[in-house]
Length: 131
Image (tube, rainbow, N blue to C red; front, side, top):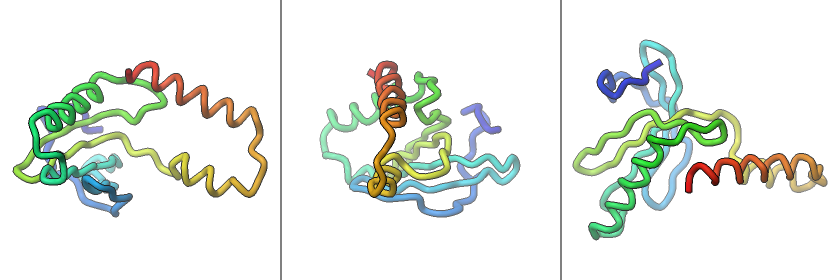
């Protein structure tokens, strides 16, 4: 498993597929050529960020916070680097659907209260360490 930033090389990964996109960039599923480790790579187009120092400082602060968090309900940070056009953030890949898609899919059924309480408990637990 690639974990040392000293040994990190973006060319060691192949893009498997695009996982999603948003206002600031795209997220890809990538695979390490040698180890087979799957990661998510978020590419944030710097030109899409507000054009001021405060916005860039907040973005880098978010990266610094991500580096420090180690929690079972938060995707683990692996690496980051900046090119002239993009901020690249590599995180643990979590397979399956995100919670929003799961809720939409299950909305035709009555969700058990225990399940809802479990999800909320996990979210609150994760929020406690991230703020």
